[in-house]
Length: 83
Ligand code: HEM
Image 1 (cartoon, rainbow, N blue to C red):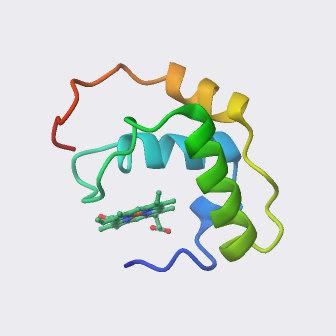
Image 2: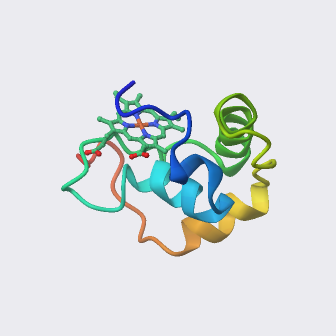
């Protein structure tokens, strides 16, 4: 994956900000990542906890509540919508 997750400030920073990045695919259509808002809060919390464990140098777990708070900040998008 490009850019690297290892050492990324998104991975080592706030849990809610990382959840927001992955939910929205980078917050803006200028960022060319797929959005993952079709996954449940529990699925995203598990994935992001793994990512922070593997690439985030003890950045700490991401909770279901972190993902739910991040999700509440973004309007729902129709299933299958482009980034
Ligand atoms: C759930 C798994 C994923 C996580 C946790 C994740 C996380 C991230 C993060 C944190 C960044 C920002 C890195 C930085 O700039 O420091 C990023 C960027 C990016 N990701 Fe992902 N990603 C995931 C899956 C994917 C997949 C499946 C793709 C491609 C199909 C993808 C494509 C990209 C691209 C192209 C960027 C760079 C976007 C840009 O700067 O324009 N990601 N990802």
